[in-house]
Amino acid sequence: MDLIFGKNKKEQLEPLKAKVTGRIPAWLQGTLLRNGPGMHTVGESRYNHWFDGLALLHSFTIRDGEVHYRSKYLRSDTYNANIEANRIVVSEFGTMAYPDPCKNIFSKAFSYLSHTIPDFTDNCLINIMKCGDDFYATTETNYIRKIDPWTLETLQKVDYRKYVAINLATSHPHYDGAGDVLNMGTSIVDKGKTKYVIFKIPATVPEAKRKGKSPLRHTEVFCSIPSRSLLSPSYYHSFGISENYIVFLEQPFRLDILKMATAYMRGVSWASCMAFHREDKNAEVGSNLIKVASTTATALKEKDDQVYCQPEALYEGLELPRINYAHNGKQYRYVFAAEVQWSPIPTKILKYDILTKSTLKWGEECCWPAEPLFVPAPGAKDEDDGIILSAIVSTDPQKAPFLLILDAKNFMELARASVAVEMHLDLHGLFIPGTDGGTRSQAPAETQAEEAADCQAASQA
Image (tube, rainbow, N blue to C red; front, side, top):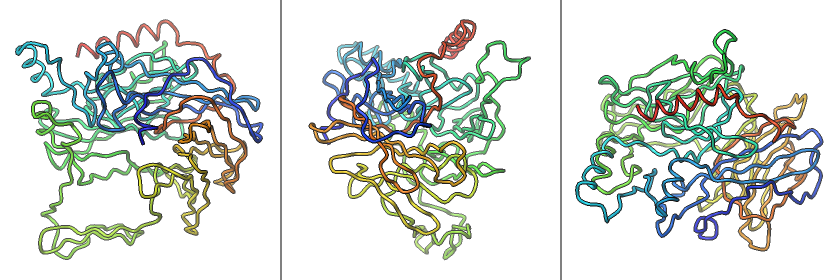
């Protein structure tokens, strides 16, 4: 474990040509852009959780059978503050940061008070979001960071609160057929109410309203759902969509707002403020709380006021699932995922057939695969007509990490692109099709100036 998580990864700022073995399909042209924690210690301080590490972006650009790799740390305000102080000074999910012990008592008291309503981190280490022609690194706070997908340069800092009244947002948005971003966040005790807010960021802006403006300025709230609890809203990793509906589950894993407000003073992390709420006073004893007909899972209310859950297990150890996104919100058959057994580390990539309950797998000794991503072949008719991309971390110092390319139908290896770098185990990302990597121009000066003003206004707010 220390081999992967105990050592900070180095950046690869200039494109590094990979050694390709096998044959990359001629139609596969584009950039695989990924995000995940790469720095776990700053000076002599260490993060307490893998999800706290500083964001390291990396990419594989595929063009004419060649692959080039590069990586760069997200230059967030959090990164800059930590590096300048040579220690962790910005709190994360599982790591609470504290003021310099040399500060006087008045500085310490002010710091405690300012953390009662915390300004969350902009260490956007989880995912990549496409918004119009722009790309953003995301996390689960109210901040996202615009990035250049070709150079991995960190651009503007964006505060969702300038466009929609939320304190937290998911890092896993959906996209509709027009390319609009669909996402949701939690508005905590706003005007005496706590609610879940579902919003849309358009992919394009009408010509009359465009004038170089970012689509974020046209964010539309189209639904809000009151939380069952004012001070204990549900935590949610993402949400579902169908052709006509957004599906949100207010689950019993909740965030305690009062505990969060006092976490800094109590010397605990925000992660400790989340817990399962087991009571359900409205349910009748002996009743099954699951009303969905398509599952055998049950949740039975017993006489001791406890709810006993029995899941319907489709596959044990399936993590980081992806599908052919053209089937998102529709009937689909195949799930591509990482397999985890006896530890939180993925050891195989699998294709799970929901219809037949069968699997195909790829695995290799000393290899840890990242989330598999499906890329459809041109003119594909079958759901699994395409390839799978996954960044493979090697635990063997003598074996270079590589980009793996599989045939999505039969899971046979088509090619791999090995790079002589210390690659980190990432979380999520996306594939940008096309051959214009590195030639895309920067945003117009008017747009950059406008976004800079937006960021300044948001930071003052």
